[in-house]
Length: 145
Length: 359
Image (cartoon, rainbow over all chains, first blue to last red; front, side):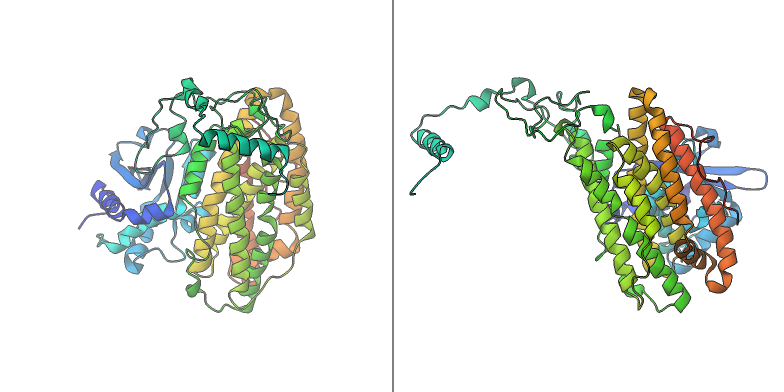
């Protein structure tokens, strides 16, 4: 059982998506780096998730958001927002209509997406189905609530 | 054969010579500089356009396309008697190029989807009348506007020099994307007890501006950056306010395609303005017209009421829906201006429409 958020948690999502190569082969290639930034009252945790081709090729924890690779899209929000999304995915096996990545970010709350430039932000839209499937993998595992 | 034309006679004579062993084989020694290359796939995604551009000089894209005006593949040997087809007159690379064109084409090919197979149509559920009608009106609007992004590239593709094949191939992929979008919104309108509702004269006015743009670049700025950028937000909007997993998936998949088109348009305008900074005002002028037409379209009652009903969750919550649309409009403008800034053009003080909706 892995805790959210942690490197192990995202590594498990990575392993799951890579263990099902047909999924990304059907959805198509993804070339982007997404940083999951979980905000607490006085601190943040940042995890870099790198995608290339049909795979998630790496996950690592960043000491600070400034360490994110150039061109990263940063998905950020308070722990409560992330917690709600993950809990919903675990409970339903996938995000329900109200808890998809797009829905949670469109109004910039509870989560928001941003990057240094708009085209990098647009990568979040361009690979939306793959990213949703990546996080929906939490529904097929038993993440610690 | 009772009669053969001189050209047929000549071909038959050649064939006869070859069959008698009078071989030429000169073609075997043609293009020596282009021989001996071995393109390999970069990774498991397979052999892409980007990969074959890395070998020899095949990835060298000339600033001016071949003067031959033919379909000869870039990098091949072109005989002196190659006829010009006379139709390829967009020969300046800066008028069509984007540095991401090959990558976007590879990606587009890998990310094709099917509106028949990949949408969970069986998950549609009967909806309240107001919601179903609002969804059908939105789908009617989208089915009306989507294929302009097929027709516009098609209008220019047949004039683009074949030396810029990366651009032509990308535009071809976009045309098919738009075909699928038109198809999927039409299908949604017809699949859940509703149907198509009212088409829009304001849409036609916007579509006319795009189709009648005086050149490819102004048309692209209008369509790829302004039009598709706004529609990208509409798709995000649609995903959020979906009634079932069916619309959710439709809007999400369309959103992905649209973001790819926006990426091409932004990078093309950037390339164009780097080469032709003196033509910035031309872009401003066409965007002013486009912004006015887009704004009029987005605020017509048929369009805005239907979207507000979906955003609010029903006719009785339409005010709440308008508030959400107001926020999304600000976001739409913000993203539009940032894409333009990436392309090298600042319209912050030239925007022809409000930054915020008065709602």
